[in-house]
Amino acid sequence: MTAPAGLGRQVGRGLAWGSAGSVVLRFGNVLVGIVLARLLAPEDFGVFAIALAVQGVLVTVVDLGLSADLVRAREPRRLEPTVATISLVLGALLAGAMAATAEPVARALGSDRAAPVIAVLAATLVVSAAGVVPYARLQRGFHQREIFATGLVDLVVGTVVTVLLVRAGWGPMALAVSRLVAQPAATGAQFLLSRTVPRFGYDPALARGAIAYGAPLAGANLLSIALLAVDKVVLARGAGEVALGYYVLAFNVASWPMTVIGQTVRPVALAAFARLDGRPEGGAGEPGPPRAAAGDGGLALATRLTWAAAVPVACLLGALALPVVTLLYGGRWAPAAGALTALAAFGALRVLFDLLATYLVARGATRPVLGVQVAWLVALVPAVVVGARTGGSAGVGWAHVVVAGAVVLPLYLVAVRRSGADLRALARATWLPLVAAAPTVAAAALVARQVGGSFAALAAGGTAGALVYVAVAGRPLLRDLRAARAARADDEVGARGDDEAGARADDEAATDPAAPPVLPPAAPAAAVPVPADPERVA
Image 1 (cartoon, rainbow, N blue to C red):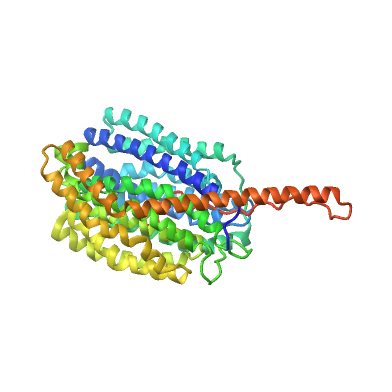
Image 2 (cartoon, rainbow, N blue to C red; image 1 turned 30 degrees about the vertical axis):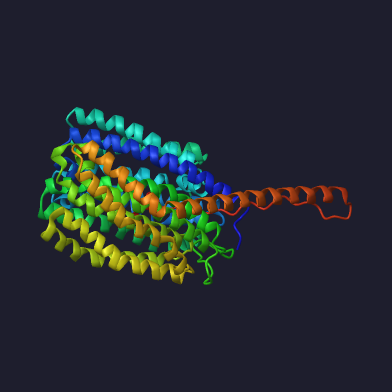
């Protein structure tokens, strides 16, 4: 199946705005994190991390996977009122439950100080539920510029409130209140930019189809949150809030560059894979045909470009973990470097898993995604316990890497193969960056050791590692970029040709009295966006 006319142009524009927005927003978050790390104690980060983990779990339930079904839906406007109603009712119920159980939940997670923070964050669940439909509209239409604008509103408002409250002595509560202010501002921007008017209703038939598709995805998202919370719970109960603070900082640093890559590719990839899916007309949640996926070539190309970007970032971040941490946050955060080395490698794998999960979601294969998350959690819990006992926060990081490589990757490969992907094409897309990884790490580490000072070590080591990576993998990557650009140009030529052919047909029909009347074009097929925080399924 060929790509719909103009799809390449939409994807290219979406990727351009998505990459620019991700870089700007992530850089802004880095600066905010640096400021807060110098204003807050490590245990304050640990307290907020516990509260945020609870909120993240419930946000997944609020979404129920329905936003992803909106991105895929043939008639999303019919589905929107039902999705809005289900999400808002769930949001209100879960917000009340989260606030009512804040104290026992905080005690169970090993931090009594987190109880009031959890209670405050509960109100954000209602706001998150309200934003499902407008965010879905933006994502389906490849409106990455507007999504960037809403993220910028969130960043600016949240930063101002956080800094003011931290300086006023609010501690971790400042972070919670900032979410309570910034999230409604960003959601309001989504409604304005997507031109969405809140509409509520309930169609039982549409609800059944959407829930059948979305429930496994919501379960997978829920388990994904648990996967990213179990390590923090183990550290909080076994090593205390200080160790947890170091680990959370390392996790955040490792996530920064990978989030830029993931947030650039994921929203565009979901809509593009759905357009290339070739599904027959049907209801919400109907899976694609069991033949080879129409978007399989797109998966290989997306994997090649995404992996080629994630691997060198992980290599340099892992090899230069100590100068990165001490330069950004100061010497008192040096213990976080050990965990950062491991989590950098895990971050690269998460980017790959995220792309494979996005492909499965677009194909309607949400149950295999859920199955992978179940197996991942079952394998990770004992691994994290052992890692924490033997290596502390760094041991927990390496437990993530081992489970991801030995358990999760094989399961995802089996799942995408059953959905029509060509594993040989994926292997060709990933092997070269892996070959370049070892010399990149060696060059960066060796050069950094010869230089004194965090900034000099980071600059010299990063330059040496980057040069080695480009020398090994740069030319093939450049060839792939040129091929992608050529494919996009061909798509634009095809789209113009279709428009010209349509215009000629209209002219001929207008001058031929025997020609049938010209009918208005059919409304474009519609679809639904991924969850409010699609990074949950990794």
